Length: 94
Image (cartoon, rainbow, N blue to C red; front, side):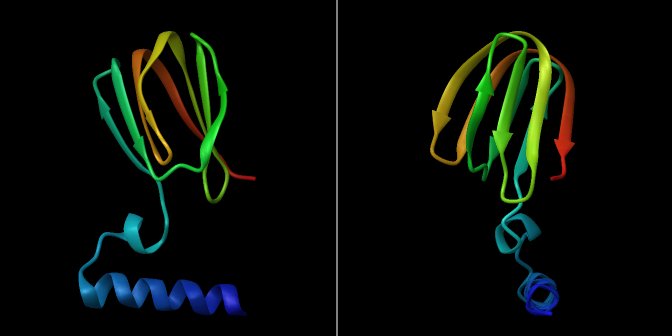
């Protein structure tokens, strides 16, 4: 019940205050430039990294990015910039 109430309050705040949903609802913001750059904000940590795969922990679930020649250009506590050839971006709901 409390979880549903929280969702209703967040939805109302988003609409009435004209704030972005990612800010109010603690959602990740993903910006992709073609198949070569992906910038993810509001993640909870790096779970796995290789030159073919990146897995991030989110508040709800995980984000899996698959491709090749991956290089982390920037990594901050809640932001990451990945370069390489991006083939797939998958949201894994736990």
